[in-house]
Length: 393
Image (tube, rainbow, N blue to C red; front, side, top):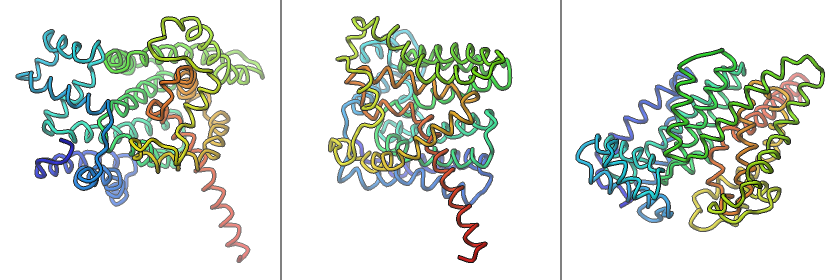
């Protein structure tokens, strides 16, 4: 079921997607050889897994098999694509999903139409959307007036990031698409703040909120809150005071997350019981941000072992990156920090939601912090090397 049945169809699909990805990457880095290298590295894990690795040690989780089998059932039931957006089709998908979260069925079905009704099809779509997300991430940095050299560095890190490759290249989960929608929504907010009123960005932001209703509904409300807070705090900066910047940072880092917990989560705890047992939010946030501990990973999730180890190794640089972010880009890229705070409090409040998979939407801010820390380290190493060469050491 997971392995390749039609190698010719698989090869053509992979080559076409890699070609489009190459064009997107080339538009950013503007170097043909580097773009080709990045594409090969990006897709080699996906190709190696489905042609070799899955034959001997397939990765089998619960949710990915449910998504695939139910999507395949809908695909086989519909006579044409119109069925999937018809009343009959939506009711059937809603019955399978147990609610209105059937958006990922449509995502899978689009992949089946493009690449065939195989397990690799939506995974290939996920790898491609991770490429698109990295481009949107780069554009967001440039709109926020981040230097081009650092933006390209952050783009490459995002493109080849160990967590993104691990979660997008092997299993059929919707989290990669959730990350894409989240980054695109944040990009739209940054554009509206930096470039002024633009109807296209408002329309795209509203469209993403609508799509989230069928993918992961509560993200729509998070993004709405972020949009409102971002707008209000941006206006507050018009107050001329030497303390304004400190007040805004205090609000984003502590007051808003604490208020979100006491006003929403704690107040409506009875209605949120279906999300699982509540936990101490302070311990829960740490667990959400740090889990899993390297070498203590469930064998089922062994495919993230290397990524988890790297995540812990670069933790000091990530924390330093947070300091640099607050110092340099707090005002222009504030929505990323707001997202990090709200999601950390939300997932940190429920024990069942503190796995590494729920941290995927946070990768937009995590990768940026890691990029800032790594870039700073590389700059210092270059300075030291330059000084040493001048002294003849």
